[in-house]
Image 1: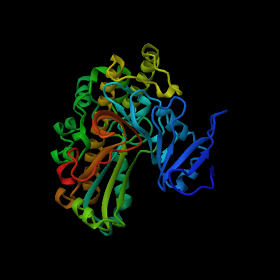
Image 2: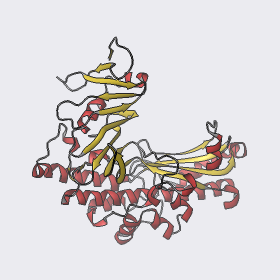
Image 3: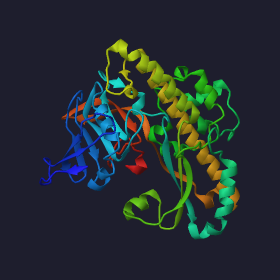
Image 4: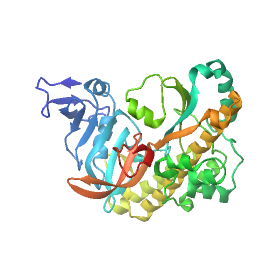
Length: 391
């Protein structure tokens, strides 16, 4: 990476090479200390923008993720910018940490902008416990958690295997299915993004192979970077926020990071093939075949959205069941009552999803299909999409 000898500000520029053989160096304009812009060039419809410090950007100089930001900017219907968050790194089609708002009327849907693990997400749970109260029992707690929640590649069997009809209901209802079957409370749904359910889910758009892969996997962690972590609060930056969330120094919390397991992976794989073949029908040409896209309103686009939403509902249901099983493991390992344990969800948010939202673009309110790949939504105080307790 080469920093040109210019003053800081919008005119400052960096050139960074791409791994792609024969590619021109990527020009980056410095907007301010934590925002960099890839100017429009080639097929780009909008500029690209990366939120990162100069130090973080230095680590990206050999990463093809920057080229992916530029590639995403070529998608039909994209508005504003092709965006990348500070943790940007190479992914499938979209960079991980990539975000794109696509016009809901005239734009496209791209499975690469969601990813293979549809609605991979994280939930944070608080307890009434202090670390000093449980530190001597941590080993036993870990053993019980491992015995209760299956983890690893192909893990299954956390709850009784579901029939096809019952799994269809879970794909339709998401975390609401978990509540109907004793794995959740209303408060859990109230503290989950979208209430743990996308209404546009279409279980009929999910393949039989995806059903087969997922029917034993609800309540399981999976492999890769997924985890269930028992944590403690060590530092508080905003006391008033911590108080509102019921958090304090030394308190035991739980993080659960998982997604739609084999069902979501298969769904992505299925529709990459369908959409890849359909692109020519709609005259769509893009610089990377991994960005396979079709118009949102096309039959293929609508089928993918219905299947993606069904897989997202599966993932919310999966994390909710794991939370229920984790609470049970805590009670068993520590011999506590529900009241003593105080197990309650602060929030569940997904980071591999495409959702319809309204945003102001160039001064006008527009309906967009927002692709988020390894990135979560972030709404300011008072936003109507947040649970009342968090507004």
